[in-house]
Length: 246
Ligand SMILES: [Zn+2]
Image (cartoon, rainbow, N blue to C red; front, side, top):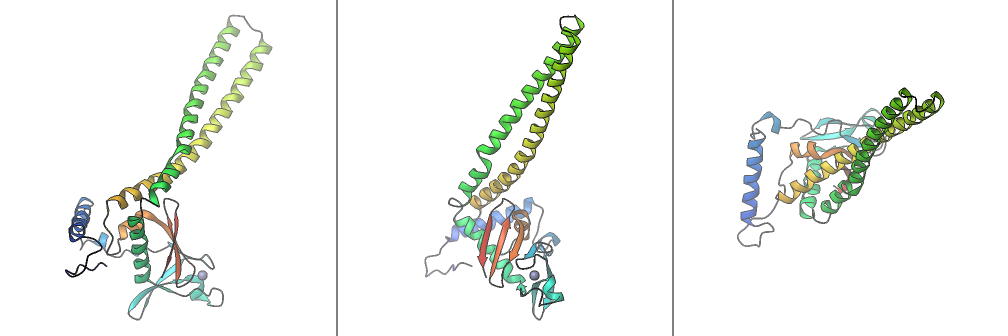
């Protein structure tokens, strides 16, 4: 991808480039992957992940003369129902590499603010409120116990006891419902925030990619939308949608 000729100023220094290679090897060793390993070979990582921007159907892998292509299933059945043409496997892979390299190059501009935005105050506010509600629930239980004691010792009558007990029960239900809703919201945000942080840490450390990486694709991409043979969009697991031209 990058010229390493002695006569030109290299875009990435030889030293950095070699370090990147070593890091990648180290990473592969840690993950128990060697280049000949099946894990590293094409596992059709695009299967089920390419979505037609025209009709919404998934793409199917096909072998054309001399290359692999992906084609909208509707288009295969009837090209009048969906005009989207096939896209080459190697072009999709190159687009992914370009997209990741842009993120590596501009992680300070793109990923740092994004990770802060999805991982920041909302999540903390949610967690804070959950703690508050848990304290309120504990107090609610204590009130119920006190109420029962007061009733048993004859300090309050049955009518007041029932009224107060019902009020506390319905209040506890509300607290539980709010906690459940917050936990759902917070866990959704944690996922986006976690994925954004993973990508940020990766791009901070990684040298430019020079070949397609199955594992990285699976770790970072939820799906690819194809709008035409020349325009696709990567939907990242962290919630970002990035368009690439082919
Ligand atoms: Zn289609």
